[in-house]
Length: 133
Image (cartoon, rainbow, N blue to C red; front, side, top):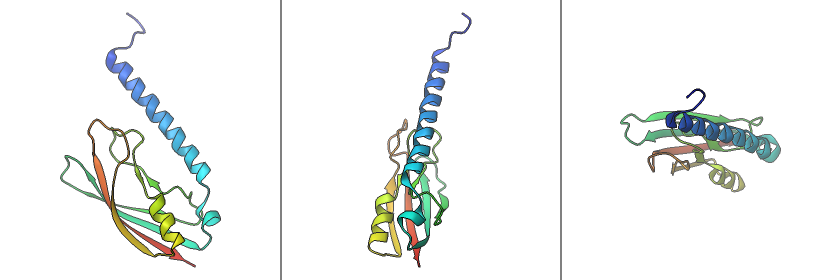
């Protein structure tokens, strides 16, 4: 039967459609968030250092994400699990709370908020450092 998709092909299309929709939503969230310098003019830089842990994988991955005055003020870091949909680690409350209280450092742990075949598929241990004028 020509043109008919197998169930695997349909599943791949469905997954690709969800990933594309998710990518477009992420881009819109960035635009809606505004820029660090417009929202937080006293902030000169934000550094998020983290150790990424994925369930079932022994090796942890260190990551560093920098936010500059010209960066989007969307403090959400994507999950690295390729099967994760709409996943990531939202540090918005942590970072905005730090700025509100003019704190320079914070530490904590977060679990990925995304949908994946395995629950609790990834976590991060993070440290946030903020520089002010």
